[in-house]
Image (cartoon, rainbow, N blue to C red; front, top):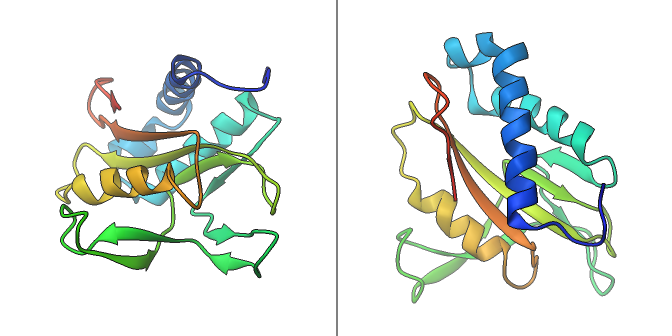
Amino acid sequence: MYNGTFTKAELENIINCCLQKLRRLDRYLLDEEVNERTITHKLAEYLQQHIPEFNVDCEYNRFKRRDIEDIVKRLELPTDNNNWDDTKLSPVIPDINIHERGPHGKNILVIEVKKSSSSSSETVDRNKLIAFTTEPLNYELGLFLKIDLDNEDDIMD
């Protein structure tokens, strides 16, 4: 139950529990290497059961502040995925976020997910997490999650 804040360890425990449930109930999705969005959707469903006080959304791209209209989330990201001295404003869609919707909502956790079979670079996802945890979105925590499709050697950091 939420008591005003989550520690990183508490959230990792919840995520581990949800990953175990995903493996137990939806092993087929991992074995067949379905699209990452399908896996993150199921994981988000299990997270919602553990954290009913907040909204758990996949690919939620809205950012609303009191002083501006509802807009698509955009972040300053490196144009070469590495160099923070050369950035551009880019639309972003987080894989999973735990938050309160609306202009006064709290942003608790943003998760970027990769399957272990993915050949794409993790750098873009890790840079997005850095940007999500700073102005203007200010997520309390960002988590990179690499789901091991074969075993249970997931990487969380």
